[in-house]
Image 1: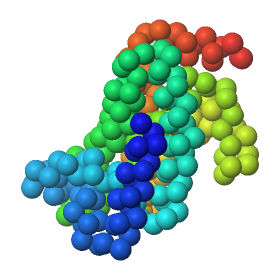
Image 2: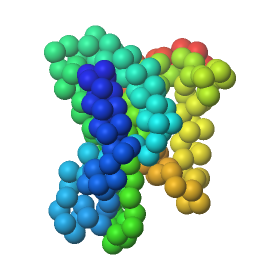
Image 3: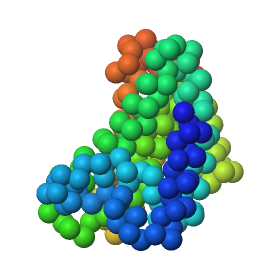
Length: 202
């Protein structure tokens, strides 16, 4: 599933780099979503990206942690693994936009693109299942996953309150939150697994 999502996202994003009309059609615009009933934008925006850097970062993180989640789901949830993975990915994408959908519903000029909310969900699900595994910040600085998760949530919340850049930090925060909670919704055994792994080190 991870490789299929990456392939489709890269194909659509690369096409959209030279097609402003395609970006306009697919990007998340809360006003058009609500007032024109274009609810497909809640999903379609995740397949277009602002630039190569935006696309590559999201796809590298998705590949790195999505493959791990697929293996974990395969072991723990058997034949439902693919379905649960898709719900995690697209559920994270939907949940990450709820705040903006409500807050920006009358702001015609608010637009957002990228799979960051969904990718944050994948990343935090991976942290849930392996809280002390190292995440390499900027690809070089090793940080325990659970520590990275706390810092990431604090930073995303703080930046979403400041709103002084063009990054949807609220989507990162909500997507990450969804990814961390989702395994618990699937099974209470997953929650016990997290607690056991967390306190095994502590």
